[in-house]
Image 1 (cartoon, rainbow, N blue to C red):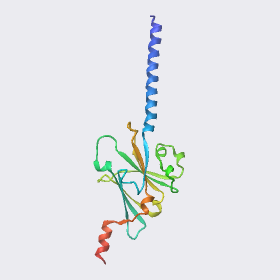
Image 2: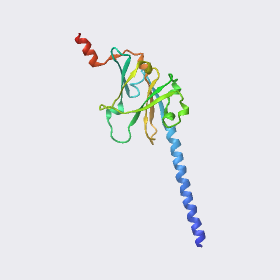
Image 3: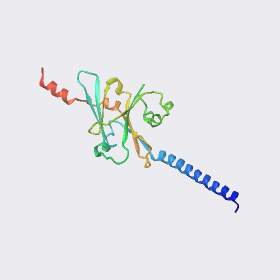
Image 4: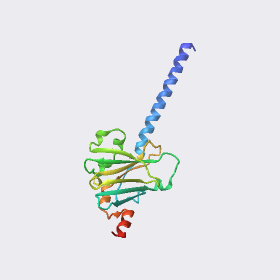
Length: 184
């Protein structure tokens, strides 16, 4: 073989390797999306999905303290990525099909034009998401839970519809209950 043919053959092999790598990455990415499954969480199925949502009404205010724990946070696994919680506030309540905010979180804001705010939340020392909301915000507030990075096993991603908890019986903050029980 001449040197020219040898170089052309090596160049062809190198191009073929690049094509195979690119194709394998594209196929992997599309299969990740098909493995993931969206789950809507509300007051009727939260414990079935591994979440526990507690809503505490603060006295003398129109605010609610929301505490959300998950089975994953109770296990406190330090191996691998943890799910991230995102507080999402919309202009108006979303339909069940409109509560899949994954595309919005990945930069496609046109898919959810009603979204006003997206705030990543950190877990507290106990491993729970804990925040306070105004009563008017509860009707259009959601906690979206997903991995911040693509996962090879696909997995589940969740949207917790906080408006469904507004209609349940509320507990009062423990410190406020004891203060009221003590009297004036």
